[in-house]
Image (cartoon, rainbow, N blue to C red; front, side, top):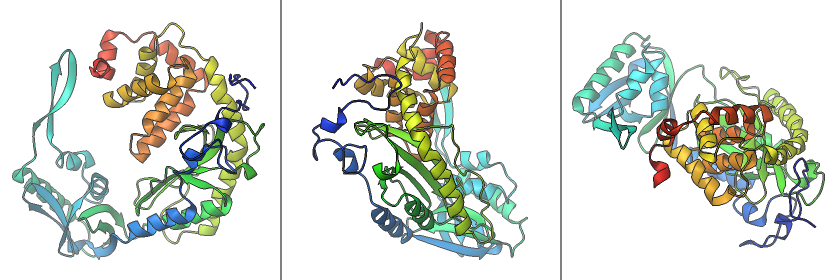
Length: 410
């Protein structure tokens, strides 16, 4: 059988089926994924154990505002909760800004060094001008306390703290989190035989790709080198909502491709009062069962992307246009080029570029990784690709320096 993948065909030959890896040959039993990949995955029970372990490091405190104050300690501003100091994360600081009626950017900036812009080798870059000191810490503490004094002294807040001394959330008493363990159990009930790839869960947030077993996904051929999964996420600290998104993957790559055509249950669950887990389960089940049948079509779309050419633009212009439109950092843009050169150079088309983006996402934090997977999915849309190729033709040397810096020369 030919190993040439025909665009528009979800049956892609037997490349993975006969591939010798470190753990064996071909697909793992019950999944369209190579044995080497499945060896890196977790079971639901293993993921639950990781969540329980992380929960052991945290302490959630419900306390009135009168027991909360800021204090400068050396070069740091800490938040005293019932007299015990905690260092707020930027996320917690952003949440504190709301009841204090302050600009969150101002508060977060006071936790970071002062930067300045300089030009080196024709490239503008941000460098540290000076670090924050004791006086900055005192100013920040004074500003916060000035905001605290205008809040009802008896108003209660839920504060999430950790044994490492950090404070990771500052929430109102009425806030009710959707427990990550309960959410994972809901996913297990819908996809009971699934395996969890790229599990990045902790006691605050959960990010995971649930590999769809062959028993519940209708593949057009059992030799497909592609598979389907559902990318799931939830936050207990107000940084995101319950969400599921359909995703496809190449069976030999530890990266997915998220499709924006079908939205998850984003933003539909209000974090107040008692969480109705039965209703949540019904909504998540409907969401996922609607998405799974779409995955075969999305696999076809990935193949079709091989017919989307660069047009009159070159690779650097193409990646530069996509990076510029999506506000990707210089280092991230350079990494996309590196991933393309290392793994995708035989695919000088949208397929190669979308996989370069999803590969690059594996080096980022979970939120950014999912964002890169979403960018990858968008590139298989012919209209989106046409827009970027048109933009790419206008990218000149000055733009390339701005987007990539001197990273392409290293």
